[in-house]
Length: 134
Image (tube, rainbow, N blue to C red; front, side, top):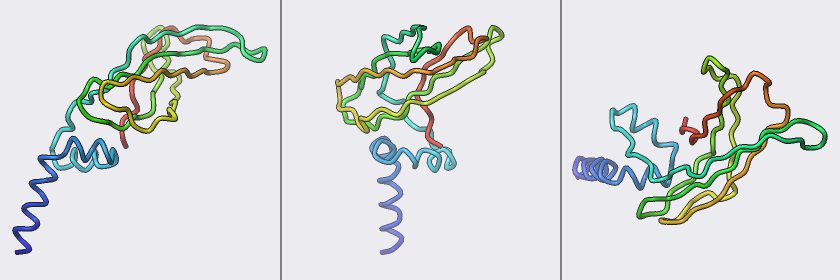
């Protein structure tokens, strides 16, 4: 009986991995350690823009965008990761922005905005992605 229970539990964990990783993103490394790839996220970053200006008398870089859930179920919203690159393409500064929304329903979208005071002068490009679960 115990063997059947364990087998059923493992089968469910395999078949429902998308729902499990959505509900508990911390399980992604466990699945990766077992050689099971995480399914592609249904979240997409769109309408990314940036502007430079002054904030409280200091230079600031502001990044804005939209997160869209293109899937058919509610998913967890990971922090947005912003990377600044120098002219050679190397990362020179990164920061994360945690949205107040923890989940996003199917077909929904949320806007985000994050700023960095005193960005590095050698920054030439930026990249906006989602922070990977650790």
